[in-house]
Image 1: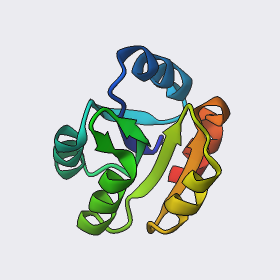
Image 2: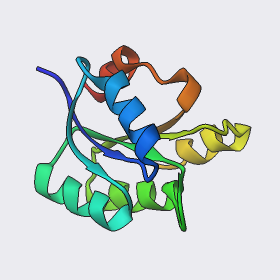
Image 3: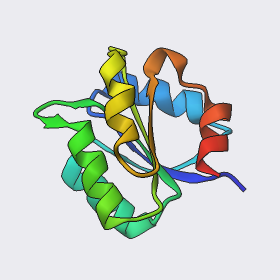
Image 4: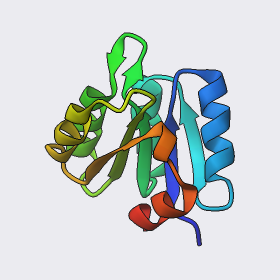
Length: 116
């Protein structure tokens, strides 16, 4: 059985590309455009993990990851961005069960292994 995740990406084209990448490796139970939708989707669906874009318009993905980590202990979170700033991995490591993966390095098979 595939691990279940919530995808949080505010850019429709990027969201579609990521959905295609994950197809056959994980079960995306909800796709959210922002933090409020993401929190509600995790509350309703209780997924194994979440894939969150770092830049969500006016919201920071790191802030959302911290909120989700506190509200849903054990949720495995992957933060991602097209801009792979070195500090992102460090910031992600300070959030329980969270890692950073650059969008250019996203691989459905490897992400599925993390979310199992």
